[in-house]
Amino acid sequence: MLTLDVPTQKAVARLASPIGLFLLMLLVIFGGEMLIMFVLLPLLSGGKTGIAADILDACLLTLMASPLLWFLIVQPLRDAAMVIEDKSRQLIAAQDELLRQEKLSILGQLAGSVGHELRNPLGVMNNAIFYLNMIQPDAEKTVKEYLGIIKNEIDNSQRIITDLLDFARTKPPQAKMTTVAELIRESLDRCAMAENVEVLIDIPDSLPAVRVDSHQLRQVFQNLMVNAVQAMPGGGVLDLSARLVGGRQGGAEDAVAIRVGDTGDGIAPENMQRLFQPLFTTKAKGIGLGLVVCKNLVEANGGRIDVESTPGQGTSFVVMLPVEKR
Image 1 (cartoon, rainbow, N blue to C red):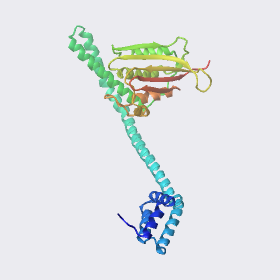
Image 2 (image 1 turned 180 degrees about the vertical axis):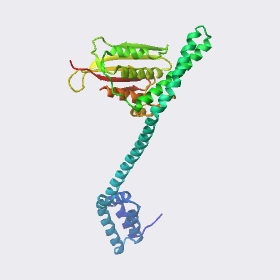
Image 3 (image 1 turned 60 degrees about the vertical axis):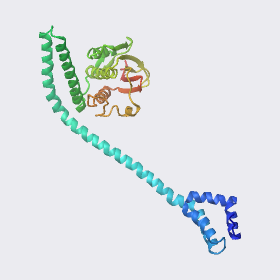
Image 4 (image 1 turned 135 degrees about the vertical axis):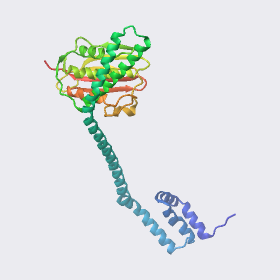
């Protein structure tokens, strides 16, 4: 059995007291150095007075001064580190934005010249496909199938070129009064609809007309419809609807909300904030300018475009167009 001398027993009893335990807790918080000064040195000195008492007094003064040192030194350093970290994040974001703007500037410079140069041969190819289909109405099924594939790829290429040109410069809208039903019908007629996609249209005849550039808005809705169909490769429902809503400045019920919805897989939450960023795309084909062009054209016509999506259930794009006061 271990037997301690009287001075050591007193030191141990002092540590086992409530005050001693409290001090030990504080020592654990403020570091191993203080623990050594409080526990080992008094034990090594045999619990005697003199230098051990001086060391204990110094430790107590240090303990009392620690909160002050925390607020005067540690806390300001901690705050400074947080500020530096925040500024570093801002700097990285600014650098990324600068690089993105540089890429967009180069893309804008190339879009005009390259777009026109590519459109001419694509037009010739498109005319050739039309001519072959006309002179060979009884061609073999395989021939017609491959001609159809070529035609679809030409249409995809022309759509990309159109996005490039529209991104490089958005023309001022030539606005005139038109009905929402007419906009949707003409846009739908320009889309190649898959056989396994059901189209639902709910556009009341009582909706007021809107003053917009019909050509620009047809391009917007055609792009949204094509995206919706592509989001449902296994089939689904394309929902086209419109209603009169309020909430815009200038009075109640002064905007038409036109919805283009699908029942596809939806959009991942992490991609929602990047949908309208140039060059962002999750498609195998495309360059990520379609939605950017849609947003620019809608805003040029005094409206706005919103998006809602639920993974596994589908996505809805809502175009808000102002209604003129009579």
